[in-house]
Image 1 (cartoon, helix red, strand yellow):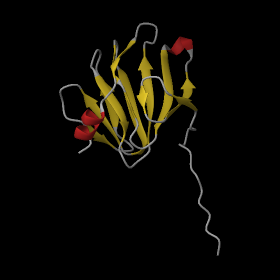
Image 2: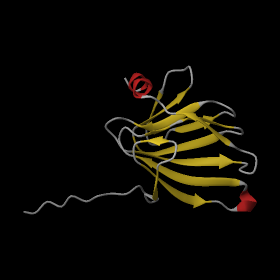
Image 3: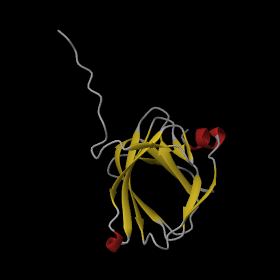
Length: 136
């Protein structure tokens, strides 16, 4: 009997590779960006161990976790383990990062409200030491 190994994509698609402000492999799939809605909705998939850099949003951001295991950490606080179904409401001007667990792909839908005034400030890489401490 032949066993088939099916490769699966996130439910809303994998999207295109993104490298700026990420450590590891990640993909972005834009889902909605209607100007009259004044928000962007997108799917981000992180390969195991991948995370984005420390950053903040002037208005805030919402994450809807859909696949795998991930982490979210605010500067100066312990990291939070994320699973499908978790929702993260990130307050305005909160320095944070998010990404995949070392052994799991992780996907979330991101929502950026009030895009015309919601600026992202990229602060710097999450070091291997910071990441290891966070996911312990």
